[in-house]
Image (cartoon, rainbow, N blue to C red; front, side, top):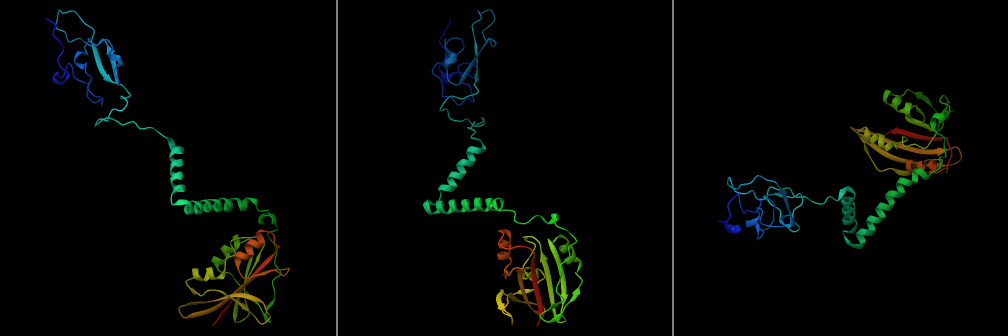
Length: 284
C-alpha cells in the first residue's frame, strides 16, 4: 500500500533529507523528492540528475528517481556553510588600486587633499624638468681626451709644485669629466679641478672631509685680501686642525661659492665651460 512520504524533519538519511553542504533552507516538499515532485529542477540551488539507481524493492515497477547535487552557484541570500568555499567577486588589481588611491586622496579633509595634490604635482614636475632642459653642452666623449689645461705656475705670489695623486684620487679622476691636480706652495695644499660639463661629481670639500672622519663646521663666506669671496670651514680630527676654503669660477667673470648654484647655472646655460674649482687647505 502506498503511504505518504514522511515529514522532512523526521525523514531518514536516505529519503526526504535535504542535501548537506548546500547552505539552503529545507524545502516543504523534500519528503516527496523521489519522483513525486513534478518540478524539482525549479528549486533554487538544486540540480536534478535523472536516471540514478532505484531503491525500490525487487519486482516493483521502476519509478523515475532523482539524485540531488548542489549546483555551482548557491541560492541567492543563502548563508555560507562551514567547510564550503566562499566565492567572492574579483575586482582586479586596477579596481583595488583605484579604491586605495581614492581612500588615500580623500583622507584628512580638504587641507590634507590640497597638500597631497601639491606634492604629486611637484613630483611630476621634477620628473619632467630634466627632459625639457636643453642640451647646452655636448657629451664628454665628443671632446678631445688628451687636452691639457694651462695650470697656473703660482698662487697668491707663491710658486706651486705639483704633487702626485693617491691611488683612490686617481681612480676618481679617471671618471671625472675634466682633470684634477694637486699642488703645494710650501705651506698649503691646493687642489685644482677643471670641469668640462655640468656634473654631480664635483663634490663640496666638506663632503670629502666628513667622509674622512673630520668634524666639519658650517661653511661661511670669507673675503681675502683681494676682495675674492671664498666658502670656508674648519675641520678637526685627532688634534689636527685645518681651514678649508673653496670657490668655482669661469673665464668670463662668473664665480660661485656653492656647488649646487654652479651646477644649475651650468645646466641651464647661464655660464660656459670650462670651469675651475679651487680648494685651499691650510693647517692651523
